[in-house]
Image (cartoon, rainbow, N blue to C red; front, side):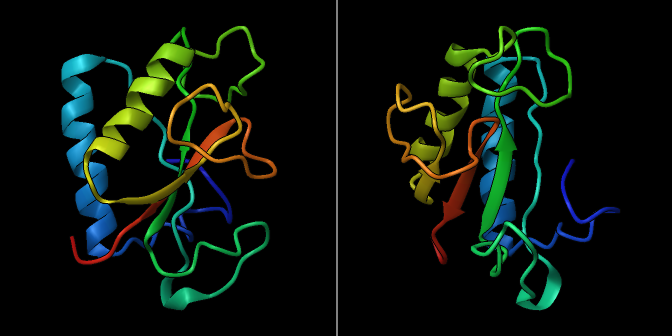
Length: 131
C-alpha cells in the first residue's frame, strides 16, 4: 500500500470496496504475477483530506499504473516503464466485476476511463454500494 497521509491513515475501506479489491486481486493473479499498488481509500469517519475530496465513503480507491519492470514505485502514463497493456487488463478486471461506478485515469486509450486532473500515474475507482 502507498498513499497519504502517512502511516496508513487513509486505508479505511467499506466492505463492498474490500470485496471488489479482493475479487480483482484474485483474478489478476491468474493473468499476471506482478503486484498492483493500492493507494488511498478514505479516512475513517469520512473526514476530508487534501487532494482527495471524493475519498469519503470507503468506496473509492487509487490504484497505481502497472510498470513493465514490476517495481513497486510510481510510474505515469508517459514513462518508458508504463505498461499500457497490463494497466488496461487490470482496469478491465475492475470494470468486468460489475461493481464499478466509474474509473478516472488520464490514459484515454484505455476503454472505460474518464479524464480527471492529476490522474496520470494512478487510476481512481469508485465502487457501487450493495452489489
